[in-house]
Length: 55
Image (cartoon, rainbow, N blue to C red):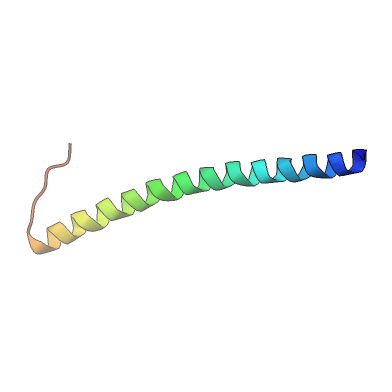
């Protein structure tokens, strides 16, 4: 019985670690996506002659 409890605890811990790492990676990629999107928009505006103000 204790072997099953140990395996369940290990499984739960692995799932928690993967969830935490996945959440951190998702946050990093969301930030990178926003930065790239803004940069591409700025370059596109420069090429088309539009000007925007960034505060």
